[in-house]
Image (cartoon, rainbow, N blue to C red; front, side, top):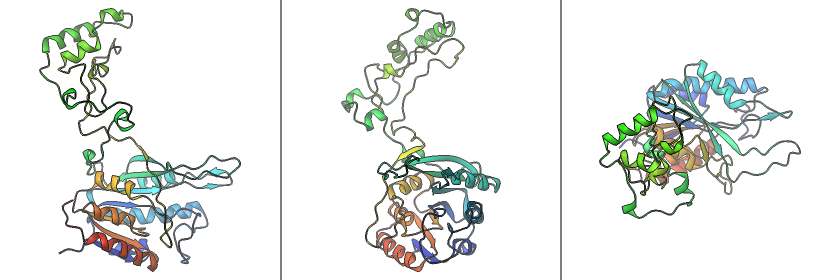
Length: 342
């Protein structure tokens, strides 16, 4: 049986040199902050550089060297916060992104991780820092992506503003669309102008019925009645009218703002913990069961814990032996339950 995880003791910039190329479908990590915390006594620890430029160069070197470790459809995910000095934000996340783009990565997204339980600042003239960035890069123009694994219910359903309709009141797709009615509606719309009276335009219910949707039934994702999905006012040059928005029955595409609470630490646990919920979302989207995931700044092993729980395999690297021991202990209990099929 192939081992499901490994945690390497050492400097990330050196340890990655011994790892095989093309092994990992995703690199997911939260590197040390610049000038915020000391994680141990090693003077070479990333984050203790004299200038932010030196810090960014140190981080960029790790990720540039790690690029060859990714599969051709692999991706890099960096959870990183910004830093203030003399009341000025240093723009750490996006300056790092610039360096990695110059090195050949494709910058796919800058996701906002909103920490809904963030602590208020005591600063007399700064806002509280309630978010960090999740920077998403791909090795090449395309990367593996499983959007269905991270789809979300629509706002109305998620927030409970609408009651869940009875099963017979939910419609998952069009039923017997009327081509003649669609052509008639299209002629009316495409010959209209912004001055055309609304009374001469087809109603949303007419449009819904023409396209095969019962206007009194509900979308399976957001629970809006279908007549609210049929557009009325996009006329005059909008050849794609009508837009009939029917949500994917598996859910909507998630936004690039993720509202996830931070993870508390207990006792002598590693104190800079990013939440497993965040890591799992990235893993579900960017990897398949059985894939290898790398975290070059492993800490207590959060990325590995999430990876093993989802049936992936994991390699982590950490500069401090106590973190390596703790991560191995945390991961061992997960690996006993791993069967590669989740």
